[in-house]
Length: 285
Image (tube, rainbow, N blue to C red; front, side, top):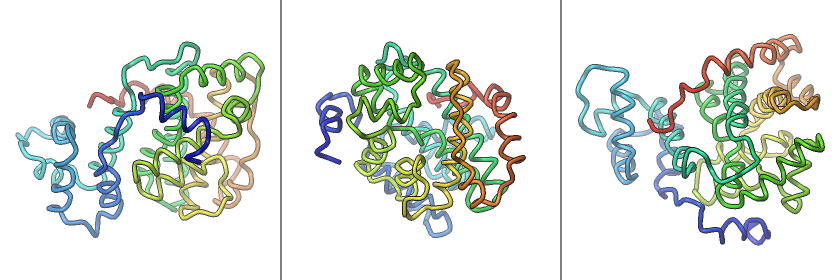
């Protein structure tokens, strides 16, 4: 993957932000909150520039207590909330400015797709009980981080993908393989997650959410994200004015022991849920 021409273009663009090396370490720690020690958490987080202020500011919305230290913030927030804020923080680091660099790609509409994936994965995780629903909601926000990498580093390629998709009615993955010489945003996303040494669970979700039957370490999480992404992609295609409809989620649905009625209910309610939540997630925390 490192030798692929598209990856080389991304590396040579000089736009890819550097994520603190401690980020992967802290996520691995927070993914297993029963095993971590608060002093270890404070020690690692203190090395990530800016995150102390982010956590304290987030906490100011939850309590009237005057929190002044990183340790106090982590204690009050807890491992789950600290993890979710940390993942939101890395997503913010991936956005160089409010508008990005593409000219044709509709970032606002695509953000609604990512939010829709988060909502759908939350409901599926809740219904199946196979994994943490809050974790899946947060992962939904970054499952397409490969798209953001394209937007930042080689925006003209993303614009070409978007044009093929919208003007010719070609599915996004097909358009990506045409423009990106056989790879997709999922491949790019998995590459960058590994470069940043993010937890295996995140790498698997980002890399395999379009190929849920590839052998990996996070089968339940990947399958839930795949089904959620498919539901939300149908919603996204309609936002673009396309009539494309993805119908390949039945096998995943059956493995998760979910009814068609359950999936259809999520799909029908997704636009309303996305509109309700849209704009409430603040990357300037």
